[in-house]
Each structure stands twice: as C-alpha cells, then as structure tokens.
Image (tube, rainbow, N blue to C red):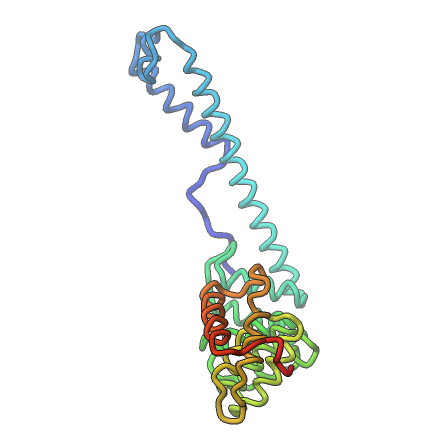
Length: 262
C-alpha cells in the first residue's frame, strides 16, 4: 500500500543549513567583509542588517520543522488507520477510504477507496454506506442494488444523509424503479431533520409539480425558506442563489409559506 506522498519541503535543520550556505557564499565573494552589508543595501560597515539575516534563519528553520513534523504526524495517522482497518475496525476502514478518495497522506486511488468503503459498509458503518451511495449516484460506481440496500439500511436507521440519497435514487430511478412519491417521502424524512439538500429538492419538486406530485407554491416556498434559513448549513452557494430566485418568483406570484399545508 502506498505511503504518504513525498513533498519538496525539507525539514527545519536542512532549511537553516541551506540559508547559512548562501550567506557563506556571499562572504567568499566579498573578501573585504566590511563591504558585505552593501550587498543588502546597507552602507559599508553597517552590520545592523545581520539581525534580519538571523530572523530569516529562525523563521525558515521553525517553518520547515513545523512542515516536517506535520508530515510525520500525517504519516503516523495514516499508518494507524491502515493498521486498525486491516484488523477490521469499521471506522478506520472508512477513514482509510477517505484518504484514498481524496489523496490525503497517500496517492489518490478510487479503486482502493471503494474497496475500503465496502469493507466498512459491510461492518455497518453508515458513513461508508452513504459514501458508496454517493459515488453510485455520481456514476463512479455503476448501478448496484447491493449499494442501494446499504444506503436504505442507513436511511431506515434515521440517517438524514442516507434518507436524502434514497430520495435521489427514487426520483431519478438509480438502482430502483423510479417512484416520485417514494422520493418525496424520503426527502421529507431528511428535510424534517434539517438536511438542507432535501429541503431544497422538495422546494423544486413542489414548485414545478410533476406526474403524481401536485404543484404547490406555498409548500415550495416553505421548503426553500427552510433550506436557506441558515446559510452556514452547507447548502452549496449556487443552490442558495437558485433558491432565493425561486422565492422571489413565488412571492411575486402571491404564494406564502404561512399558508403551506405541511
């Protein structure tokens, strides 16, 4: 298994040695040391600049050492995940999947990521179940009924993210027979827990109405307002803008969330 990615940054002592070497070269090129300050814009004999050189040494050394220590800590964390994951720890298996998916402390590898997410999901880790479902929705994983079953299991346990995923599956027919009524049912479960993407999706559904879902501007307005009531709850900026535009149109058409029959 690959280890933490190498970086060009050296450790603190090496950075310090590098700067000292540069300073030494300047001294060699200037046999008359009294004129050395002129290389730094100072008058000959004025050695006050040396404090700036010392400060540069210290800053470079401390910065380099901090980066070096962080890499060591990252490597230790990755190794810990790996060891625990291989022993069957579901949380570590999920975290290892995250590392491989995002290239954190290791070379990015989606095959390895999916492999570890599967192992974690098989041990009941709901985050891994939902992650597999998300990758399935984005076509990283092809249609797989087994993955939908994992997400459904998490959804039935009350996990809002999984409930929203089930809404997406039923709305678009990913891995299940398309069923808009089922989609709305799952969206409602997630939205009632404050899951903003589900709230936004319900706003869209009721604004447009389709097939068995009756158009209702009041309900649409209610869910749009819920979705953007706290913009720190991770609704993507483009969806916030879209929701605000829809709210303006619905209000201009005379709809009111206070009349929504939820």
